[in-house]
Length: 360
Image (cartoon, rainbow, N blue to C red):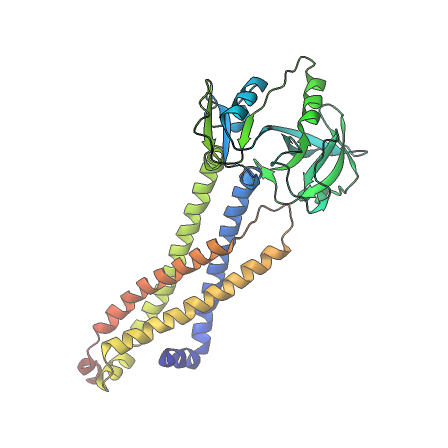
C-alpha cells in the first residue's frame, strides 16, 4: 500500500485525471440510484408508508387496489375474521385549486378513517380529524404557495377543503396525496353522483392475522404485492435499475482499462522491479492497492457530492437517496474494479526481466 501511494503521489496529474473521471462516474451512478428510488417512492410512497401489512381487495381486481370494490357488509365480516386492526381506504385521483386561483393542482385523495392507523404523521399543522372538509396535504404543495389554514377547492365539485396539516413523502402514482376523511370523500362522491353508495377500494389490515379471512369475492394480498401492481411501477423500476447497474459495470471497466494502459506503458519498470528481486505477489498487491485507493477515494467523493446535492434539490423532484443503496452500489463498483485490475496483473506476469534488460 505504501509503494502504491508513493507512485500515485509521484504521478499526481495522471492519477488526478483518472480520479476525476471516476468521481464523475460514481456521482452519476449514485445520483441515478437516488432518482430510481425517488421515482419508485413517487409511485408507491403512500402505500409503503402506511402502517398496514396486508390489504383485503376484491378477487377480480388483479391486485390493482384502485379498481377493487368492497361494500360495508364485507368490512364487518373482515373485522369479525381477524384479531388485527382493520380500516378502510379509498383512492381517487382528482385536481385541486387554491381558492382565488384557477391553476389546477394534481392530487390523489386517500380517504381514511382519521381515528384509525392509516392517519399519517404530520410535519406541520395538525393530524387529520373527523372534522368534515379538512385535508392533510403532502408538503410538496408548499411549492405552490399553499399554507396551513388555506382553502382549496375540489375542481370537479367546487367543494372547499381546509388545509389543516402537511405530511412528508406521501405520493401515489407520481401524484402528491391529500388525506381526507371517509365522510368528506362520501360528500365529494355524492356531489358528483347523488345515487352513490358507500364502497371501499380496500380494507387495510395492520397485522398478519389474515389466515381466517376467507370470504367469497375477496382475497388478501401483502403490501409488497400491492406496490408491485401499481400501474407503471415494475416497468419503470426495471428500466432504471438496468441502466444503473450497466453504469456501475462500465465505470469499473473504465478504471480497469486505465490501469491496463498504464501497465503497457510501464513494461520496463516492471522488468527492472522483477530483476532486483521483487516477486510477483508483491507487485500484484501494489497494483491492487492502487486500484483500491483510486476506487475507494472516488466512491467517497462521489457519495459526498451526491448526498450533498440531495439536500438542495426541490421537494417536488422525485429523488430519494438511501444510504444502504449507495453502499451496495459503491461496494459493487470496488469489487468489479478489483476483478478487472486482474487483467493488468496478468499482463505484468508476462513481463520477462531478461528481455527488458536486454534492451527489447
